[in-house]
Image 1 (cartoon, rainbow, N blue to C red):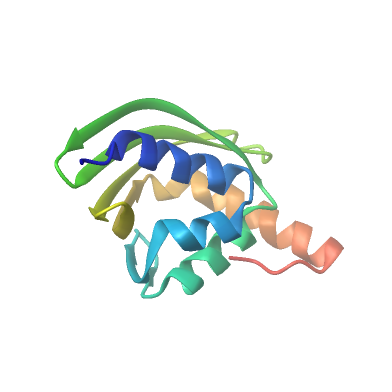
Image 2 (cartoon, rainbow, N blue to C red):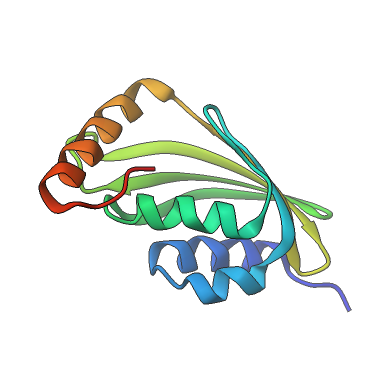
Length: 132
């Protein structure tokens, strides 16, 4: 029986937006490989920790398109923030191993993220929250 990778990818984005970190643990292989423009993570727990830090500004992910090719899924979406940067175009290339995500390649324009990072830093100073 084949697993619907599109549904799994969308469930992953929904779990991130809803901060359901326990569900995310079940969606990833333990040695998840994450590669992005400014950081690489090498375990599911490390990546979930980064997502928790981003949760202070992440409102939702508005999916624009999903492409599926075997065990690879490419999701194009807007990462909608509560910052003045607003919605940030984002692409995630998910690599599955069965029904679990084995690796994630993240692509986005770093320039708008400077605003997000600055606002996260300011919020952390005011509220004592950690910065990604």
